[in-house]
Length: 343
Image (cartoon, rainbow, N blue to C red; front, side, top):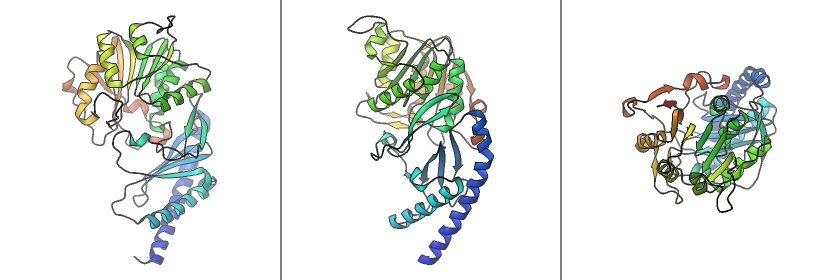
């Protein structure tokens, strides 16, 4: 393909993206304002030749370019991304400086959480009457996944008066919703200090104070070496796999457990390697042991072509959460599977 024909094709694709975004923005703008949602999905590879996913966060956009069926050289890819950025800016009335497009390739381990820069472009966005800090520039993911919005809001409703455990909590958005909904206790666990600090900030943005607690103190039911009572909102730095086993031995239990693990993790801080396609049965079974009678486990799976065999969990009631968590910006789109487990 000549340079002129490539440029013509890029211009045509930019125009298609512009038109599509104008249509989506008109459709979603009133809904977002009415419901108080400031972070939502605008575009998800709607046009096959434009494999972008674009999310609006207030007055800015975070986007990802997914792998193409063919390769472009780096210079050509940059020119293409720049043209798409201009189309997005024109359609949404957002300066290009507030539009962040990254390239998403297949990730292993915790690569999706690796810092990519030090620009520190952040926004505080509303969701369900709450505020959450997002970083659009420095990581592949922003800290708040729009496709889990309805599930987070549901955690606020169902967690009232409950003891809630949020495993692999990331930036603790589920936990903040649970606390705002009146949960009696919320334990938010992650292996990353960065994300636990981010979670603490999300709590504070909404008038809550979550405190770091040593996992041993939590499992022993004590305030740690200084004694005293455990705070109700707790941030715990621990390997989730090891914590689950330790909590089983300590006979600790929760009313609602949120289990949203990465598809794969081989962090050096973990006691083992997690491959969700391979290990989900054992992971879910062990976590079910931590439920109070009548409690619920919410499990979310992110690997492609994930399949859950209900026969693996005899005596457990399993329900598909899909119909409950599809919001307006995801209608007609396939979301990662989510299930409720109840013993």
